[in-house]
Length: 316
Image 1 (cartoon, one colour):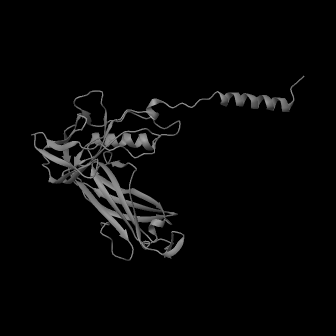
Image 2 (cartoon, rainbow, N blue to C red):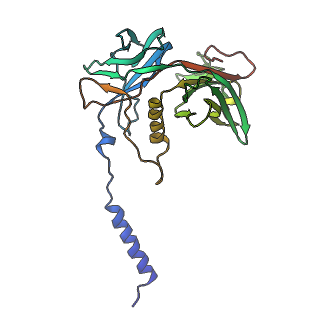
Image 3 (spheres, rainbow, N blue to C red):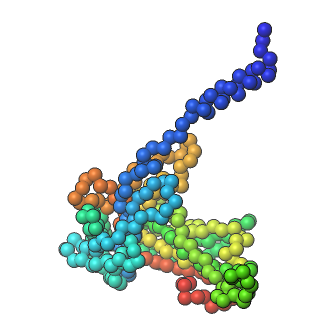
């Protein structure tokens, strides 16, 4: 006698219950208790102040901020042995004086941690970053897009990277004048701010190359996209774009980083690849460091909107 639809349905539910009941969560050690490796973030600024941030890797599931690598000794050195010291301030951030480096020499970053580990990046040539020719915006449907144009008449750049810093004015909707303290209402002691500012640094990897073109020209590269009705445009808005000239090797590092962080999630996306860079531990082959230290100048161009004068935080 064939089984009734009710019996078949009940059997299916029992099988599903058994299936999911036998499923245990898998949390590999790399996620729950990874080794702590040094992360070196920054570049050698050949015509300005160099800022290097040192942190440590940590568990993916952790909600804490990245651990800072403090009390390290850091300096820039060239092939002839000339050194330029970096000082720590604030914690985990190491900054040099304003430098003008010799473009005919190669430079590297050298680090000694408090734990006794010695690190150094590879010696790299100095590249000169060309200026940004134009930064403009266009509203396209419901989006507001910022585009830039740049070129190098000597065809020496070819590999580019961009970062953005945004700042906008915030007018609080609610401005209380009274407060509840000790069971009583009273006039507010510390006045509620009538004007605030938001600021954010870009996190996306934005790179481009011109090696397939007959001229070293970047045309209409989109560096930022926001909804046209974003609250950032309600009053005053400012964006500062920073342009970096990369070597072919440094571009390859950033391209791999972009693929690892932005192009993973579907069956047809590339698989994660080993990402290290050009920083090595000199006294321990098993100690991995993450980061790529290049040497180049920096070009900036900004745009701001609004009726009042910009605060000192804004540059244009």
